[in-house]
Image (tube, rainbow, N blue to C red; front, side, top):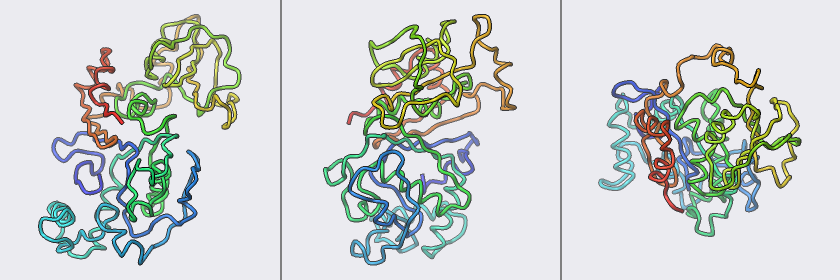
Length: 346
């Protein structure tokens, strides 16, 4: 994502298609400067999904001076920075093959890559329970990696802080789903589906947690895992459904309660905190608001899938290209086949 010229200004190089990259909870990330999270940002204990980091420093002599070498950072990518045939040398040659000017200094190379990265549509997906310590062989425990954090979720959230710190006026886009290092649950999450297989979700809003008073339960679905869009469709098909409670690992329950974005939620330490309430505008005379009535926010009225040319999904080391053909297969009810072929077992 950092090295490739693809995706600059959100476009592919050839054809100018819109391009989005989604990255799923990587073991390590590529820092764009020599700074790393201070010790306060990488405690051994799990700080959960609300962990934030805005304290960074330059480690200087850590890891025998190798902590920022390519793989963990951008050092060594200048011409001659790596021996011929080495990974670092090859990466440097690759970067300079498309950088516009003949950059020979490491600092200039890093700035050019940062500037390019800031124009890309890059998004991250993390698991709220992806918090096992990296010393337990669930992510890289190299010295340079441990300077990024002690578990995958912490490393990801630290990196969000890093991007804010080094890219002017940049706000990283990321989502946290309820689950561990599980690509199947990531692919079922609301934001992943919205980002990777976009369609008109504006009918439904989603809250951080489940509402305290869910109303009368009209129907429940527990026979298998349900994707959020499947629950939306089931709610759409019932005139008495105004909201539903969703948890991809347990159930999809439809309710008659009219919910708004300021409806009271359960506490963050509640056992239901992993559930979310989805809601839509209440129906008039047993029908949904029309698209014209809903589409009053001045947004492009074209179907969302027509606004995206390609999405690159990077999850647990796999890459999937979701194109218009992939969307068409999903739209006709084939998402299960798509996600099964894309899934990589833990």
